[in-house]
Length: 339
Image (cartoon, rainbow, N blue to C red):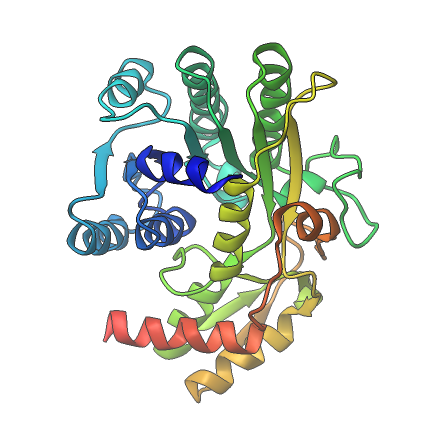
């Protein structure tokens, strides 16, 4: 991309959904720090503590009052999303679509919410891209959960993803398939990102690191599934954001052959034992955990590991943060935020 094109994009707003969410907040802040203008959308869903989402928004509004514009809206609300898009002061050329109903286990309790937000909402974004283009890039969040019952490690983008173990995974695979169709039919350049266990400061209260930290400090028992025999590819939030921006800056070129759509893994590419992860939390808190070992939860997998060769090559993705450093950073933030 030439310097003149970069200057033009810097004047063009980034349309970013899920702006009050964990990954959305960090991505927005990084864009704003780079001098970009961001139009942010979030429904402030009560799935978890809304005050945490409001605190994230407060940071963005107070730090960047002139370049951050927020709209409270649900992405499945077609008329409202159309209105927000049309209200942009400049033509929107780049989209980062991160809004979704998250969490594998919650999808067992509230399946309709997942289809409404993750499938219908994604379709609304694709329709906006179709009718109000042309876009430079449409970057969206998928998930490592699409690999489902695969047992081969590491997970590669070329692996089969037709055996989801939870509805959440099925909705994310649906998003990938819909995007492929729209990219083919309407030549929308699109990149889907399969995140592997993002964690870090301002993280989600339903994630293991947050739950474990809170319960250990309170002297409560933590639940450890599969009797502790779990392995994860924990990916620090700063590395996730670097991958998202790498995708934003490297759109798929439309050669006329196939669709201008590609999927990438974003992970740390390091397999960590869950019990070692808990040990790091204990070390940083200076307090031992009370543990209840339980069998595997429905919809969960015993191990997940990313092959990030393609993201390294095409997006310049190079995760740098060790789990030891990342856990330390989260706990420092947690203690400061909750006093």
